[in-house]
Length: 285
Image 1 (tube, one colour):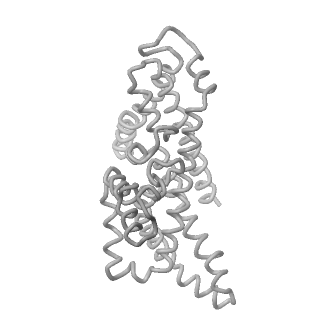
Image 2: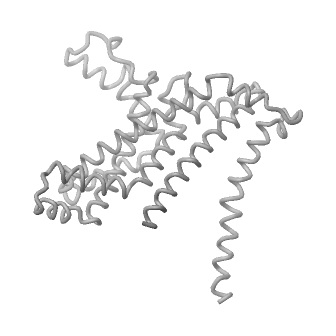
Image 3: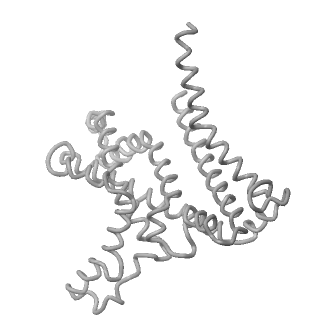
């Protein structure tokens, strides 16, 4: 019995050393740096850096912007993917769409940002099409969709990357959970099409994919390349702000970079705890 458990114990030790320890060490180092206990500014324990962050709006505005863009991206992605996977599911099993849906999954984030910039910028393809059609008289009349306050370009890039993945995910759930059979049963019992959609199809698809939806929110909130290329200088998303503060020549900004990273990590841990706890409760039931 001991010989059988030995590989498991070795795997656990390797997981702790290679996965858990680096994360725990990084979080600990960031916490000590923010408190003045290590690093270039280690003059002893101090709350000054935390006080500076709490007294300014820069980090909090960055967190709010990141949360807004992440939430809006999730709503658009889930809505579009649900529509495609339900209304066009026959095309996902065969035909051109069944192959084309996989192509965007191979596009890196940097390339996606570049494509969105070329499409939506003031001198991009969309503005030129509008001018050709006579919808606008000059490029200056085209709305600011890149580096804008609403983060439209960032949302568009992330949504374009995520919709194909969630479309495939919802389609697989739709097939594996035999939603067609459940819908037919509901119709037999007298349910209308709208009731079947809102009480059978959508609840199953969303509940089965809730973990992935939560991870999408976390991934978008911590993304770097897309908001760096398509976002404004102020406010910036939390990852861009953190790197800017960390890489600035003014070393007094470094502790605030670690604090921003700690705040983001705390939000992620809370979200993951809530999701896993809810998922565990459902399995227990």
